[in-house]
Structure formats: C-alpha cells, structure tokens
Length: 49
Image (tube, rainbow, N blue to C red):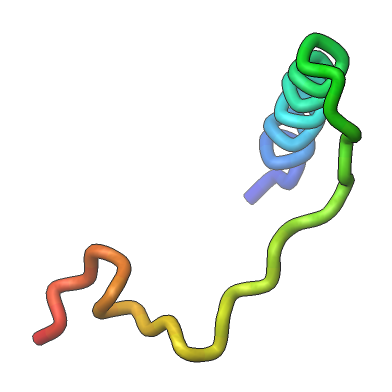
C-alpha cells in the first residue's frame, strides 16, 4: 500500500486549517488532541455489544 495519499490528505488538511486560522484570526496549533482515557469505543457511536 502506498503512503502518498495519506500525506496528500494531511497536507490538504493543513492548508485548509491554515486558511481557517488566517480568516478567523485564531492561532494555528499544529497538533492533535489526546483522547481522554475515560472515553470508550461504545460511547462514540459504537454498537456496544
């Protein structure tokens, strides 16, 4: 499997986020939020069963 499509999607996402930050006047933070430990897959739309 080729890795290039993932990089292309990440690059496109970064460009979109940069544009949003510029238009909104908000600071661009180049990181992802950590997933809370107390959240499980069943609370995020999972079937739970």
